[in-house]
Amino acid sequence: MNNRRMGAKGEKLAVAYLEMLDYVIIEQNYHASIRGELDIIAKDLDILVFVEVKLRKDNSYGSGREAIDSRKKASMLYAAQHYIAKNKLSELAARFDVIEITMEHTRAVIEHIQNAFECTNIKGW
Image (cartoon, rainbow, N blue to C red; front, side):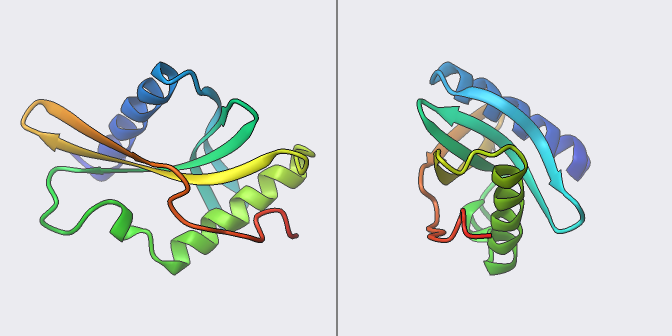
């Protein structure tokens, strides 16, 4: 399975998982020009949640959250700021979550990390 298909599969599993937790999915694969992309944008009650999804066949190359380096965080922050400004949502609280999905044979093991990293200037354009 190629990376794009794996990514789409991971996002589909993550959406189903979040909907099971009563999150409202607002958008998927949001692109903020060429500088940033967000896998899933959702609402958890009154909190805007920007979700990065990482699907792994195993953890031999490390966990999904370990793949989110400072450059990826900056890209996600830019995309989140863009989304908030574009949609005039600065009054909402916001956070970044990571959903790690590890495939164990035919079973998906999901770990949801809320507030996966701090971005104190999420609304500071």
